[in-house]
Amino acid sequence: PWIGRRTADAARHLSEGTVAVVDRRIARYAHSLSWGRIEAIITACWLECDPAAAAAADADAAAQSALGVWVKDGRPDERGTQEIFIRAEAPDVLRFNATVGGIATGLGTLGDTRPVDERRAAAVGILANPQHALDVFTDIHTATGQPPPAEFADPIDSVDQTDKTVRVGSGRTKRIDTRPDVTLYVHLTDEALRSGTGVARVEGIGPVTLDRVRSWLGHTQVTVKPVIDLNQQIPVDAYEVPDRIRDAVHLRTPVDCFPYACSTARTGDLDHTIPYVSPDTGGPPGQTGVDKLAPLTRTHHRIKTHSRWQVAQPFNGIFVWRTPHGRYYLVDHTGTRPARPALPRQLAA
Image (cartoon, rainbow, N blue to C red; front, side, top):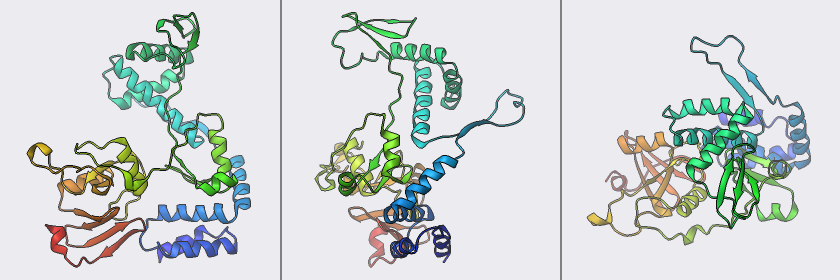
């Protein structure tokens, strides 16, 4: 019932026709999805059914959004630290986070032994001084032995510390590229690509209009990935999961498969639903495949590994969980619902 009340409240600003679509789509999942995932469905329905109103609301929200950078009021604490709060466009936040992380990693390469969080905090101070940031980027570039840009066939002769340019054998120069590697996964339908209108799903953000995607990606390099055939992923014998299989598992099950979980992050773990046995000790071939892996957050992975929770994957992408108290839950693409297996002893075994 609380899902119904929150859905009605979240849909108050929608038109009658859009509300009817929301009602039909939510009714199937109200008992099996977390509120965060249901809220994303409501937003997608709005963008799809009433694009004009959604675009107007999006523009109004952009005009009135409280973007900015704020330093918490008050004096620094006894350690001389303060807090800062940033609210910006999602791609800018991703780039900033990646840059901070890249500097923190580079500082570690240069011999900084402080914990990574402290190095990330130091990276903010480095970025506050553009010249210092260029010096650090140059030092990291030199220490890591990064190759010159791909268009240069000649080896690097030197790095000019004055203007931060890379000098190559032919005498040409190019500034060191300090841009971080940031990946924004945008999922589109073929119809949206043909028409230029519709809804896109951006991982980590949710459904957005194509106009918003254009504004985010208009000045960046875009890589169009081919459609991945989930049925043509050849398993491997090794315990480690190759990137191609990891991508396929995420596309098949984009949400943590623990009962009622809602995490859609790609940074989670992949658990072998059938315990892995090394081939050196008699393990069968092909143990690491799409149909034998389950996406879990680190916390849920530890619960499954170190407690009496158990999981089986009787069919590709369908998971049956047994709790320590003997309850069963079925998790698939529609969410989570209680289940009563016909042969519960098989799962317990």
